[in-house]
Length: 147
Image (cartoon, rainbow, N blue to C red; front, side, top):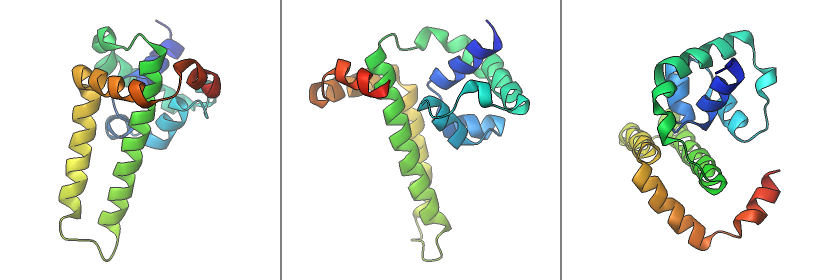
């Protein structure tokens, strides 16, 4: 497996951008932009590539069996990850606000745990995909919009 394939595997992994950031130091916004195809692997710094490659070697390599096989699940999973990441960032901003509620840190921890539980649970993810597919537009239409 070459370096590009390893980086792509990290991008396609079930791990949240926040988790990857926490373990590598690579900013979560870089991961999100790579997942949204608004940033290219070719434009990453050598330092970032090395960090993501190490992350693959220690955290992703053994999880390859869990990769989604359908384009729809992959699209759904990335959209869900991005939405949950946005929710986490909104909650984190509330924690840092001067007029923060006393329970904001606890709520942030709960949001983070929910994120990890949902993304890490293949059965739950498949259940959510089923709900998504019942209500979403035609998958071929989504695929065309992504390209």
